Length: 36
Image 1 (spheres, rainbow, N blue to C red):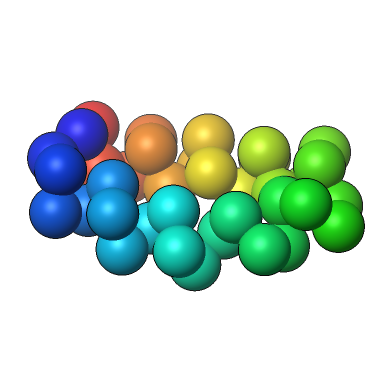
Image 2: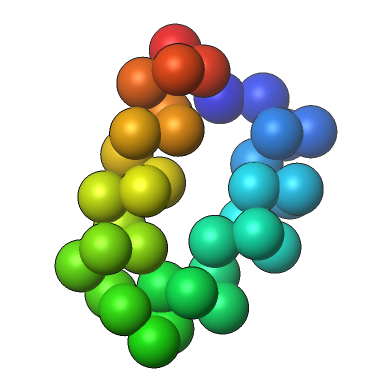
């Protein structure tokens, strides 16, 4: 995971994660699979 992706990705999924922790976390994991 690069710092560039991390900063942009966190801004995208964090607000959603605060409202929907489970789904937000699954979304993050799915993105990480693509990045890695």
